[in-house]
Length: 253
Ligand code: NDP
Ligand code: 8X3
Image 1 (tube, rainbow, N blue to C red):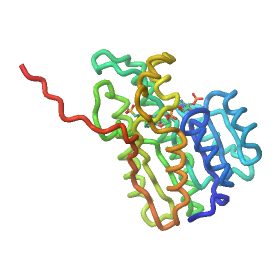
Image 2 (cartoon, protein in one colour):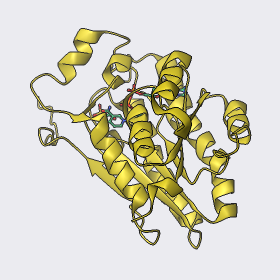
Image 3 (cartoon, protein in one colour):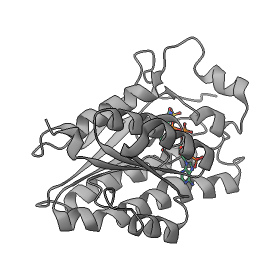
């Protein structure tokens, strides 16, 4: 296993959910972490909690120039990330495609597709030049299985799946790994965002079941990142035991 102290981990979406849990998991193991996100109060709290192992930067991943500038502006000690976790993302709404808000579609594509691609493109050249790196992308079961109301959200995660595989194709012969983590139901702020701050509706999503936690996802990603350098986890799909699949739906009559 790799010594986590050799890792410098760049995390997008570090102000909540998986991203915050990832920063904690890597920092407690001795890695340096760069936590990014839009909410400065959350970033300040993360920095206060994790101390000198942590550098925080306010960053909106939909701003292409800002993503590239942030990577250029990394301070000494944090300026050679060898792990990039492109985690920032969101689902908005659960309406059928013919009723969905087109602005919601724009934001999901801008964040989950464009923002993720900018993040990878900004960090990858350094990894290739140093011949050492690991790109971790947050896909979803929604990129594998359709569900009503998943329309553009699921499609953005299908992009993540194919992007991860195509990155592997480009990086053959380089010492840079690529992993797509595809979680199912995990209780974070995800549903609160999806339902525009409606806490009751968000809570109902996880009612009566034991969902995965942000820590479950962080632990799995941490494990994939400390595997010996000759190993690459291409894709990993994770679900709570209390989640599975539906049969095909058929409308008769
Ligand atoms: P949370 O809502 O808890 O956290 C999302 C994070 O993304 C926040 O830190 C938020 O920070 C950040 N973010 C959103 N938009 C932007 C932006 N434009 N620029 C920078 N940061 C942004 O959700 P999760 O932790 O659950 O989700 C993390 C990832 O995992 C997402 O890509 C999601 O699609 C995926 N996922 C989640 C699942 C779940 O059930 N929870 C299952 C499968 C995949 P801020 O608002 O401060 O910018
Ligand atoms: C999040 C999981 O099932 O809500 O990507 O789409 S799901």
